[in-house]
Length: 381
Image 1 (cartoon, helix red, strand yellow):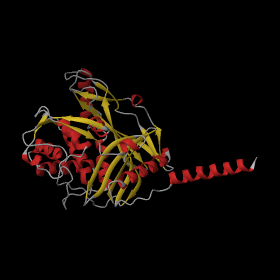
Image 2 (cartoon, helix red, strand yellow):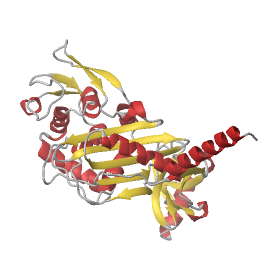
Image 3 (cartoon, rainbow, N blue to C red):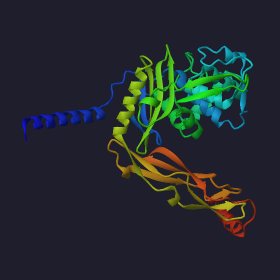
Image 4 (spheres, helix red, strand yellow):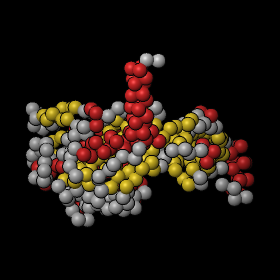
């Protein structure tokens, strides 16, 4: 081999090895708090001060959007109040008397981080932001947040408005299970149209720069105030692996993107997915009380997957089926009947719904009357 060929090969190997070492090395994170989790199970891949109470700035709006999307009673449009029109650091030209679709407010909320849209949605749901904050805190507790307290729907500074990287990752993972939410936060550009005045519009460009920069990015939300610093919740999916990272308290607005990208890259080097049972292969039944059929067939709502992080062993995963012996009619196809608890080394990491594969109308069945009666008699529900 010629000398120049040897040199070229040596140079290539050095670069290749260094690139591998760089990708596998722990990122240098300057943000006050940060975390990377596997999205489906919430298992932690990296954390720094993940339980430190910090101001989450506009990442707060993730919760506001979730509560809006889950509110089935919500009217289609909102009347803009004086409170909304005079919201601090307003981006969109919302004025008192304007009428805007809730969907448009959601896009303004999440894409350009409009503070007034958050107030408008809060007022629409609960009349004022104080009562809406109570709803936010109840939901945070339901999701499993332990160090979060919301005061505003938009994240404007308040000493009693705080969260942590870990809690914001939990909220983000919960939100990303909502298809409508995922669509909004993945949108790069849009046009907002008012219902009244008819000729009023605004151009929306997503503040999350990773939508243009990072391979596999799926969302989700930026945040910035001078007191909170740079904040970002970001998600990305590659090869079946979806990760969520949260950085809180970055020194400036640009660093948050760089550090979130580095954390996601690091997470992908550490995580892979092994397939478990397919949903249609999980076949169960339960006795039906008060139905025309005595049995209902049940399967998992989604395929089971096992995220393996940095040398995990798939043998450490286990499944626990939680399904009552007797369920009550009427039942619709897709109705939740139970759960599968996914555990790693005995610790719960995810719950997958068990759902009915068919409708069961209310009524009477001889077999149901006989067998369900026996089961109830012996306390075997």
